Length: 547
Image (cartoon, rainbow, N blue to C red; front, side, top):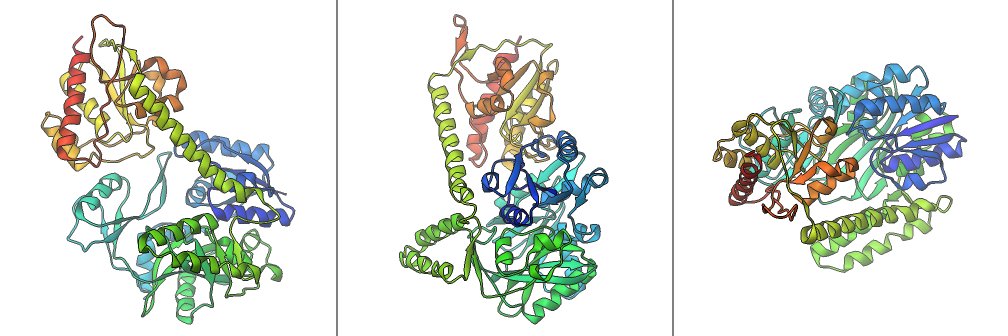
């Protein structure tokens, strides 16, 4: 039987693929952005890239439906948050071809919305962290540091896919910057930091009743948030069990989810519910509960025999954890202590997430993927440096009939200012702006707003767009601000090389080719830097647009 793992950019996918291969499934893998260790696993029959839904969701949906039909997929098994969103969005069409492994809709809608989750928890008298909901740029005085949590980690709206991060902020300036990037799209929760160890309760349920569960305690937690690199399966606390049973019953959960708590000195505090499989799935499997098989409908006892007191480790992330620990404490003792923990592997008390003697390639390729990515970055920087030293372009010749597109990285400062400056002072030109970074709906920074006013440009109503939402063939010239912008566009649209120009250069009456000058991104810089940046843009536009 053919089973498709969708959006397999998570370690849960590798563990699931190995499980399904052992049960004689033929495993297909669709990855969304970049290759992962799963691409190199012998558990996978076929790995495919059919497009990035964050760039062009309409095209991705069409390709997904064709892929399912053409490959005779019988089960679709979504791995991460956006994959579950996609499956619910395409549910009607996909149901014609295959079984969808997703939770019931009521549970899904509450779990994916952090605000609805904490409201339900408070109603059930389950402790939650203190929070404030923000829907605009006006917020009360708060204590720092604190966490900013968009109410959902992913979103599909108007055929566009969005992804949001949780951020720890230390001051008001960081708070405002984050809100300006997010608040146009969905509300944000300001949440008090809770001290304590992370505990995850992983459950498989039918009609609001827990069928199977495991409990993970975080041993090594990343300093800036995210998944744990080292965890332990533990016996469930009766208070914790009561909390989870209440939540499961209230949402009538049918499927698998992870309930994340902080274990404080006094109680367990609910942080969030994840409506998907968890990155530490290997620990659940090692502890005797085979969630993937339970989820597809196989409830044999061999898949449900929970044993606690076991460990799992993400080796790559744990190496990073121990080096950060040593650098922070300046104590080499942590390395020795860390090495000693590996003894558990030899007494069958620990398993590694990726490394497996029966599937060895992912072990090596997890590091090769990192090497390849960093090599590409180094080559990109080298090529950019060469362009900065020797790069030339034809002088820009504009006509009022030209349709122009300004592009910078994020479309919140430079390209936004350029577009609005032209519209104010050269209204005969038809122009637009966008960013190469796939982040829609963001506001201009506070510094950008104030600086733009000095040039009689109002950016209060500006909202960022991305270049993927535009048809570049509609534009006669694409004007960028630095070689980063230039290379980013040509990477996406290599056929546009003849119409991409850096805006700023030294004008020459005698030479056809000129050497451009970069206008650097002002994000995170001083007010004076913003002023100089916008001044250079104004000067360049005034020189080029006086036709």
